[in-house]
Length: 341
Image 1 (cartoon, rainbow, N blue to C red):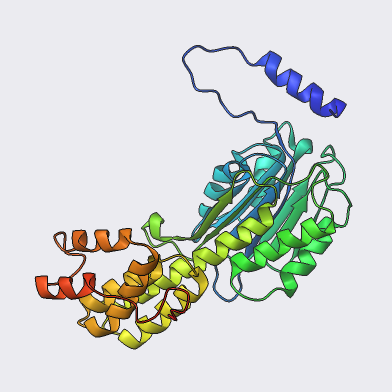
Image 2: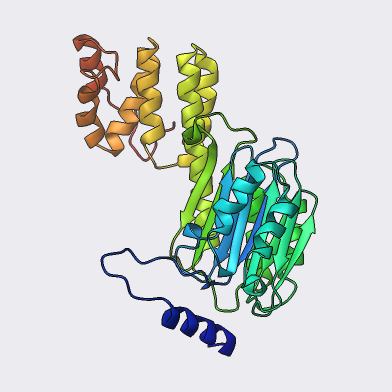
C-alpha cells in the first residue's frame, strides 16, 4: 500500500475513539480512487454525474446531483460530505467554482481530494489535490468536467473529454461513453468493479421523486461498463412503456402503440411490456387488438394467465366476465418459435 495512504488510514483509525452502540461513520479519507464526469446538457439543462471504480458500490459515495442545482463527484480519499454540502452551496446561489473553493478552504485534507462540480448554468469546476495517487488529473470542457486518479496512463481524462464531446444522444448515454473511453484508455490501474450514473432534471418540480431521470448502479461486476450499458438500455425500454401508458390515458392509441412497440423491441424476451400493453388496450376498449398479445405472453409465461384475473377486482383490468373469459382463452395462432409480435 502507498506509504502516504497507509499513514492516513492509520491516523484515522488511531484518532477516532470507539463509541458503543453507534453505527460506524464513513471515513473522511476513504480511498475511493476512480474516474468520473459531471456535466450539464446544454439542450435540455439536465444535470448528471457518472463514475467507475475498482471499489465496491462506488455509487453510494461519489455521485451526487439535485434537480435545478447541480452535480458533484467527490473521490480519491473521498469525503462524501462534498456532495450534499456542495449542492447546498450551489442551491444558495454560489457557482460551482465558488462552492468548490469554499469547501476546499475548509478542508485540512484538500490535497488528497479530487472533486468535480457543475452548476445549473453550466459552470464547472474541478480539483485534483497534489497528493492524489498518480496517474491523477482532470479536464474541463464546455459544461463538463472529468477527473481521474490511480489510472494506468495519464491520458484518461483527455480520452473521456473527447468521447463525451463526440457522443450524441441523451446525457446518460454520453456520460457512459466517457466512462467507456476511460476504460478503453486503460482506466483504473487496479481493474474495474462498480459503476453509477445519476441524471436529474433541469428544474426542480417540488416532487423530488419525479426529478430523477436516471439512477442506475452496478455494485460489483467483472465488466461493469458493459453491464451498465445493458441496464441503461432496459431503462429506456421501461421509459417507453410508461410513455405508452400515458398515451393510453390521454386516448392516444396510435401513440401508445408506437411507444409500446419500441419498448417491446428493446425489452426482447421480457414479457412485461407486452402484457401491460395488452392490459392497456383492453382498458381502452381495444379487446381484439389485445388478444394476440395476451396469447403470446401466456404461451411463453403461463403464470401471466394466472395473474390476469387478479387485476380485475382492484380495477387495473376493466374486463367483465365474458371479456375475461375471452382473454384467458386466447391462444397464439402460431407456435411460440414462429410468433411475431
